[in-house]
Length: 229
Image (cartoon, rainbow, N blue to C red; front, top):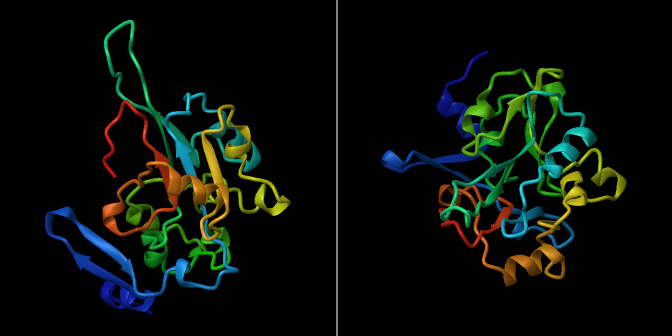
C-alpha cells in the first residue's frame, strides 16, 4: 500500500504553510498541551549561558546514564566565536539538543508513529521497535539533533532521561551533573515550579522560534552574544 506525501501529511493532522524562501512552517492542528488539563505536565529546560563554563560534564553524564554509544551524542555544548582581544578574550557556550517542541515536525512526518509526543509529559520520544530507519524525522528536524543509534539501528535523541533518571524520580543526568547549576528542569504547566519562575523572571530566548515549533528548551542569553531566536 502506498500514499502520497499530501495524503500522509493530511493523515497526521499537520498543516504546511508555505513561507517562500524562508522555507515551510509546520503548525499542529491540534490543541497545545498548555490548553489541556492542569494535571498534565509539560516538561521543559532552561540553559543559562551565563553560568555554563563548557565543561561538558552534562554530555558525559548523559552518555553514561543513557548508554549512548561512542560516535553519537544526545547533547552537545557548542562554544561561540571569541569575543574581545587577548588577553581579555571571552567565550559563550550554548546547548544543542532536542527541543521537545510543542509542534514537533519529527512527529508529523514519522510513517510508523515511532516518533511521538507523550501526552502526559510533553516529552518528544522515540519507540525504537517501531522505527524503520526511513530518516524522515532526521530530515524534518530543523534543529538537526536526531541521529541513528548504531546499536539499536533506530532514530535517537535526548528524551530528558525519561526511562532512566525520571523513571527513578530524579532530574535528567545533565541537570544533576552540572557543576554551575546552568540547567533548570521542570514542569512549565506549574506556575510555582522553578523553571516557570525562571522563564518569567529572566530574559530568555528559544532557537528558531519563528518556525512555530514552540520549543520547550529555553536559553538565558550570554551577555557577550547576540540573540537570534
